[in-house]
Amino acid sequence: MEAAATTCYRHPSYETYVRCTRCDRYICPDCMREAAVGHHCVECVKEGQRSVRQARSLFGGAMPTATTPLVTYVLMALNVVAYVVEVVRADTVDRFGMLGAVLVDPAGGQYYYEGGTYPGFELTGVADGEWYRLVTGAFLHLPPDSSFGVMHLVFNMLALWNLGRVVEGQLGRARYLALYLLSAVGGSVLVYLVSPETTAVGASGAVFGLAASFYVINRRLGRDMRAVNRFLAGFLLWMVISAAFTSWEGHLGGLLTGGLVTYGLAYAPAKLRTSAAQLAGGAVLVVLLAVVVAVRTASLTGAA
Image 1 (cartoon, rainbow, N blue to C red):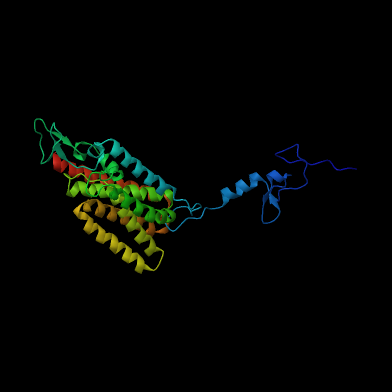
Image 2 (tube, rainbow, N blue to C red):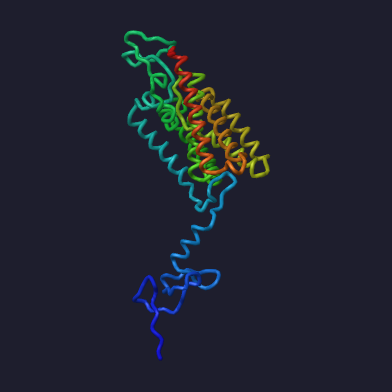
């Protein structure tokens, strides 16, 4: 007696005599997936992947599966696009740069703000509710007609390219993006605390946060710190030198914030290096920064 023909369970028109070694169903070549023993069907492979615990990095993220620093590319593109907008629209820096509190007259002149209101003058900056400046200022740079000009953008993008690829590869895309933005905001907050009358722009605060993160990462991984120490010393020296034409407050604020965030990711107890715990920690930091801004605003405006 001739045996009945067997067909693939997913493709009934395909005659086959091979079975999945896991579920014992017949499978055709299109449905076969190589296994340690025999072949598995598509559904069994998916089920096996769901049941395998995903490996986590030392910093709590999934082990990197891609080498392309996508977030770094996007951040660089955003900075370049913002600079093009600056060139086209001359008022971009005045409108979106990091500025704490100044009085602006009808002709656009800016004056030091000491509280109170004056006829014909308008309060401008974070103190007037323009909190978006804490972020947008970190994507703008000195305009082309300034002393440093386009080199401000070039230097920051070179630093972002060199540091970002390493830090993104270690932290993973989501944690890296959070680190970058928190460092940028941390730099802006220190500017607001120390020099609210000064307009500050540039990705430098975020870049200094990446430098601090790079240092903490290498120390946590137990690598040779001699070259890393020299690198960070160079960054600190640059912060001192560049204070003549850029915001040292933004640099220092970004450096401290980036170091704090990465230290939390690297040295927290293992049970706290989960996505939920790290998200909660980031939210707490955002709230603390917001409280600092609110308190500073109250002290500037005299609000109760």
